[in-house]
Image: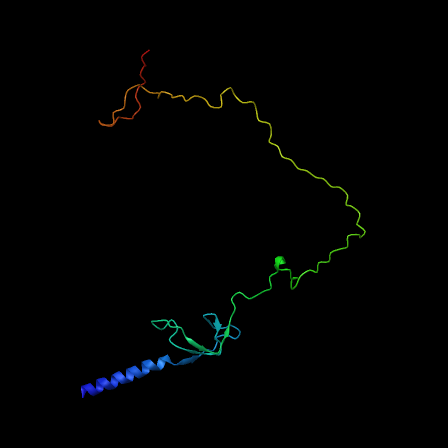
Length: 162
């Protein structure tokens, strides 16, 4: 009895799972906005196969209907080396060589300049002075970093030896 119930349950679950592999009629959510799958506009077409984010695996769907969408349409670029005239744009007319030339334009000249202000006279210090090391000013006693810390309270000035 339990075997028959398990078999019936298995058949019912399998048939519903196989029912999801049917075909789908694609209807766009907004008019004028196409639904594109792999470069094909599938608006109002039939798509068959396991496809979408809800499935665990991705297969190539079979598309019945639809039309190819060109991502980079041919806009008619003009390459002068091909020898063909451009499809649109300004019409260039070469004037004849023996035509009457217009009057030459009057001459025009304009210039600008910038300059730094004069600097005051420099001192007698050379550009690259020799390095000078100044001796530290103090009482001449070496510092002891390993003993007790010094008392930094002010003390009476001492007279330095001559």
